[in-house]
Structures are given as structure tokens and as C-alpha cells.
Image 1 (spheres, rainbow, N blue to C red):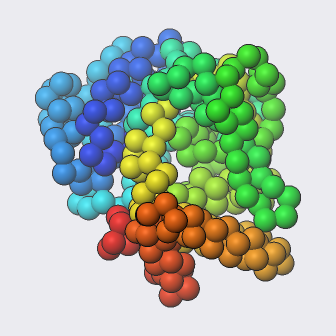
Image 2 (image 1 turned 120 degrees about the horizontal axis):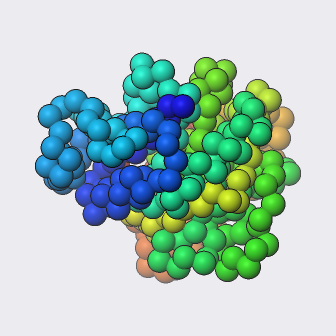
Length: 311
């Protein structure tokens, strides 16, 4: 069994080693290829890993069942492009599964084993784990995902709840966060890769919608769990970067998938974004309102991918 674990990095030197070390402590015996895709980081995160593991530009064994390979991109192309380059390499390695994993995470020792066991039971499905906050390890960040009926707004099940065993049912779920996705290679061959227009935010939502349209189920596996340093890779939710990409990409995603319901979504979207902009202005954060408006404008002008302002 071969699994490619794709870690996308952009100036993440304070997170990478903890993530990789947690993978090295994995209790399974699968052949695991860590494909570390660097988006032209300005810090020395790549150099740190090269020194620690003695890399010489090629994949190297760093554990009994784990190899590490660094793929260096020549610019910051965002989450989707970097993951897709990792998937390209996984295809060359002929892996059975691809695990998309945020580098600001730490996995439980048996997480990969539990995900694969769930995948074996639900052939041809995408599998996701239970995710806790890294700094509050009994508090849930995601236990699957839901999609609202009319405007298809996604939300994390169990968000901010203390885990008292209320999310222990293995079940089909509607939405998968890109923080951790186990994908059989057969699913990728069927549904394709991530949409590179998004750059940051909503790639996972669009992918979830696309997979479900094509008959691919998403299963939540509660026995598999991990910890996430929420917001570490995107400077947190209260930032112009977040306001811009969410405002633009929310429109793009739903335009692709809502069909006749898109007009109803637009009414909701106008109320939502107007309320947010007014609140930001009252809070003395006009830069967030400006970023949101710019994101809407770029959507209208079909300017996708990385923006020159907040990328």
C-alpha cells in the first residue's frame, strides 16, 4: 500500500517539523511518501528540513516506512496549484491514496491507519477525520461538515464543542475541509484535481460539491483524529487576505454549482457581505471592507488565482 502525503508550505517553518514528526510516529506500515510542496517561501523552512533530514534534492527515507521529497515551486501559487503538483508526483509514484494534509497540523499515531480502514469499507469515497484545536485538545474544530439547503452554505459539524462522545458515529457527510482529505487515486482519476482559480479558500468546498455531483461519497471517520493550529496558514479570519478571497471565491464556487438557486444565494450574499462590511467599518477595520469589495470586483471582472494585493 502506497500513500502520498502532500504538505503545502508557505513560510511555515514553525509548523513543519511537528507535522512531519507526527507522521513519523504513525503506527501503520504503509509506504508513505511525504511530498513537501513549497510555494517559494521567503523564510528558511526548506533549508531547515534539508539540513535536518540530509536531503540532496531527491526523495530520502526518513523512517522505516516514510520518505520525504521536497518539490520547490518558483512562486507562491496557492493551495490548489501546490496540491495539484503534489498529486502529479503521486501519480508518478503510482500511489494508491493521496492524503492532503495541512502543514500546521499534528496527526494521531493511528490516524492514517483508521482512515484507510474506513476507505476499505466505503470503496470509492473520500474520507475525513475528526479534527481538534491544537491548543485545546478536547475541543472540536470539525467532525464532518454540513451544507445548508437553499444557499449551500457550508459549516463544520461540532465546531467549538467539547468532545463528550457526541460525534462517534461513522457516517456520510456533506462537506470536507481541505485540512485533511484521504483520496483514493481512483477518485482523483474520476473527479479531477483541485480548481486552481481559487488560490486560497473554497477549493475544498468546490471539490466537495463536485465529488458529490459525480456520485462520490464523503465519509467522516471519528476513530481517526488530528490537531489543527487553526488560521496559522492564512493569518487568521480577521485579515484583508481572508476578506478578499472569501468574498471572491464564495461567488465563484456557488456560481459553478448552485444552478437555479444561484439567484437566491445572491440575495443572501448581498445581505451577508453588506452586514460584514458595515460591522468592520464600525469596528475601525475599513481595510477589511475594502478587501471584500475588491474581491467582489475581481469576481465580476473574472480575475481569479492569486491577487496582487493580498496574495
